[in-house]
Image (cartoon, rainbow, N blue to C red):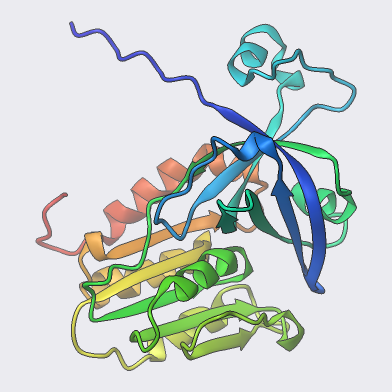
Amino acid sequence: MAERPVRKPRKSHSAQVVRTERLTPHMQRVVLGGDGLAEFGAGDCTDHYVKLLFGAEGVTYPEPFDLERIRAEFPREQWPVTRTYTVRAWDPEHRELTLDFVVHGDEGLAGPWAVRVQPGETVRFMGPGGAYAPDPAADWHLLAGDESALPAIAAALESLPGGAAVRAFVEVSGPEEEQKIDSDADIVWLHRGERPVGEALVEAVRALDFPEGRVHAFVHGEAGCVKELRRLLRVERQIPREDLSISGYWRLGHNEDGWQASKREWNARVEAEQEPVGATAS
């Protein structure tokens, strides 16, 4: 029996808060910097993400900070809690990492932290991960998501050359949540109002008159909404799996811990249910 490969220890980074900014009533920006980012590297992906580490209240961890050691020596209830956030921008020259947080008052862990945190405070995180960047060989691009996907959608739009064929849809609560994005693409801002999350987004993508040619799609947001859009794109539109970056960033009724614990199984079940008849597994 072959030996299982040794799992590579996950490296954590340490950075300091440089500045914060309230972008909209429900979006807070935190910019990190410092020498701890000297080894941080982000490639061409526009959906890069990091996992922020929030220490348990009242617990002091040994230095140098080693997450594997902490998980081996500390009881589970004292382990740092992780929260995943997309990198809005990475400036290697100035070593500045920009993260945007959706904020709903005191709800959740990371959002309230982003509002309270002060310049100079230390932040630890793991990453980056990521897998998507707009394919320059595609004939056109479809970008669709809610507030949680906005940082990645904005990064993708800003990476595309001027004049690229793009259809971008972003669902937000209202006009006050729209953001300035440095792109000449035509962005359709969908105002949710009192409607269920994702309903307007699904309607807009379904109503789209798809251009001719190969599309490369990035669709992320609430899991139930993403499930409906995946059915539209994969089953009805027969878009090849390799041309889709599509996944739920969060799920109604679940915190991140609960969602991440079930996400792999959920995605596998949805893919099995929605695999077009006659398609071969990749």
